[in-house]
Image (cartoon, rainbow, N blue to C red):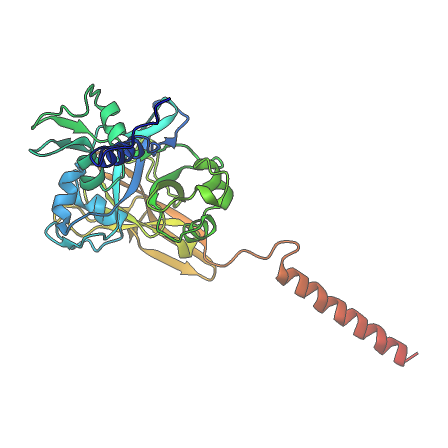
Length: 353
């Protein structure tokens, strides 16, 4: 029986390239679960540019119609310009519309990328979009039969991962978070104020070993409660902590205030000179965002949406912390204090008997 032939020097690098190709093409898709078919929402995803760039270039790459959306998602000052430089590897959150179909979420219509000379699907996925998606996902999303045959000038839909599912009955903003080397499920959960169980469930993790550096994982961010009516053009207005949105034809800025129990605080944006002075519908002496307080009670002029005009309403709330519930440390201390008084009173009674 003839002994097997040893690989020639040429076959070794060919075999190596073949193994690399298998590794790249078999990378698991970064899909997020999205159970309600046809549901739409707004999501965000991390993007780390490979090279030094500008906000204008990033806005164009991701087909974001309004720069204010990027500024708000990253809590950047409103006076930041499109020409401001973004260093290589600086993480930015990119806002985009999401739609749920076939049990998963995908970006709804944008971004759209136009192929330029020298492009290939792997290059577009890995280097242009920094591995937010992989080449197979782009191929499938655009019905490309042969991944080696794409044309200069061809428009490609880039399927970003997202979800519109509620968490524990509440609407959230699903955030495609890029995992940093050395991260843990516990650390990410604590950083973004979600439970470890939620992270495990929404990413189908079986244990800590499933968390991989540079993977995009689904982090459902709690959103501030708002007074926006369901017939408003920007309903539902979901804003997570450490972010803001500019809405109502750039007349209103709403931010999420964690110090006030995740209440949405809205005020005039101050970037559009044509915006009218916004007074409170139920209390004309109050302007949008103005608050009056007396003791623990506060009244503010809140934003409630817009159609042809900006709508407002008076909102009353408590600024004092809620009293401790049964079993809390404060309750336990108070009970101990009362018990001490009772014992001391009993001892005094015995002394005078």
